[in-house]
Image 1 (cartoon, helix red, strand yellow):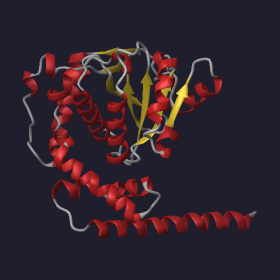
Image 2 (cartoon, rainbow, N blue to C red; image 1 turned 90 degrees about the vertical axis):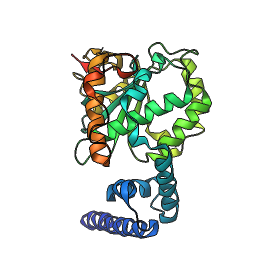
Image 3 (cartoon, rainbow, N blue to C red; image 1 turned 135 degrees about the horizontal axis):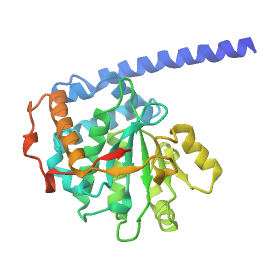
Image 4 (cartoon, rainbow, N blue to C red; image 1 turned 30 degrees about the horizontal axis):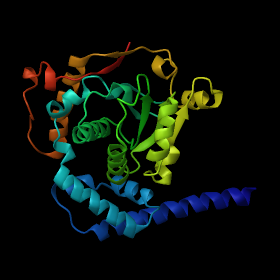
Length: 290
């Protein structure tokens, strides 16, 4: 037994050493970088791309280069809250003010709260929220958790398959290993059927992170409780807390984060005047637990 344990420990050390070598190899493979590309390609970033491609340097390099090209044209870090706030007026996607038991930031989604028909703007809003959530990860944290509430979900609020495919592509290819787990709470049969089509576009690693949770299924409920404090978890997900939106306050927080984002990436010191944000496109909602 001792020999088996020692071998296991040695294997872990060998894996760690091999991974360090892979990171260094990928760093050399992508060549010299500058500006935001250099800032983006931290060691932890390279590790995430390598992890997503099973530590294959060539495949990781291709994936990373595609992300750098996408970021240079789409410029996700330059999306400001006033540009997407109207997409969040119903609170369909928002960062919560609590973490899971592992300290991961939580993104709450409410597909039943869909309020616009523009695929491009919906995607832009989600990309903004991804960037914002990453900005607010705790020190040392790399991943986030998703909680998806299907209250009010119907055919009229359903995201088209093409849009879902585009969203999955962006998340898988440009935000690799950012998602730890996605809990789909009590989805209706309609979505279960749609998910079969959506799952077709997911790689196996992403699909494994998607967990269906049903109030009457003890095993899935226990899985949820293993990662979330029941006192902090909103009642929409089987917890004891109350979920409340404050449209104006959430907008204020996002505006503050825009300033932090600008400072982090090294562009405008103050992206916009926070004092003039009052309503409409410059106001959105906050998830607050009381």
